[in-house]
Length: 316
Picture 1 (spheres, rainbow, N blue to C red):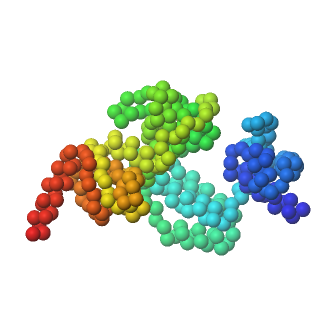
Picture 2 (cartoon, one colour):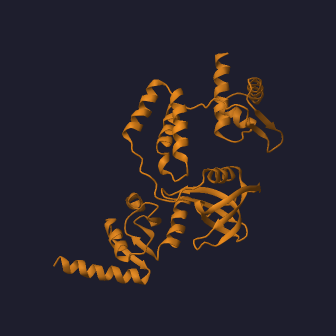
Picture 3 (cartoon, helix red, strand yellow):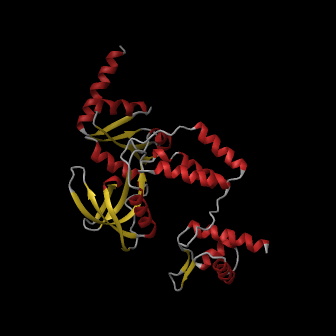
């Protein structure tokens, strides 16, 4: 009986972790047979959990929305991670999230073991969140987009461009990216037949449409993809620089918000970055601490040449 109860708790945890599971997948994770999974599902239903099942090749089990929330099963690391996230929610740029996060954290702390509660409280007492400086996004819009990404559902929404022009968009959402200041949606624009990056704070009236088959994403590193897209629209000058060092040596010195790196060979890599201030960009590249070669734009090449002469004369 103890083994069965433990397995039911693990089964509930799996159902909460993913939208849908096939019977064989659950059987493999629980190390039991498919018949045992079916019996356990019946036990959960008798206990009042809204478990639904669909037949066929694409069928599976899903934990539906019920009248009451099933117990949230977290291990120690998960509980601390959730608490840390709630403590720092004030800086994520979501409108009204601070008060909601405080209420949720209070509920979580009530059910944490004493040892974990002390760790979480110590973190809260010692931490002062740095308020976000970017525009706040609507939490319902953010949740609708995240759900559509997870469920591979098309999204329709109104979008306000940088110049204030409004348009209607039909997209296949792929991922949300938070840069620390702003939220971005990477999606395939059906009308323009190309990938686009949208600022979430400019999205209004987002509604889900029919399901779609996910496409190959525009890049393996979606955060770097967004960094390039944001830089191309934000910065006047777009620069390419060869850094004469292995990518592993310099990648910790080039945050995604500043630029992206591409491996050339074992001894060099390509830096793509941008700025409105060529002098500041030249100093930043030099401070990476390795030899480099500026490829373009020509204005940047000339500015580096000019500054190199000035620095040389300053130390004569």
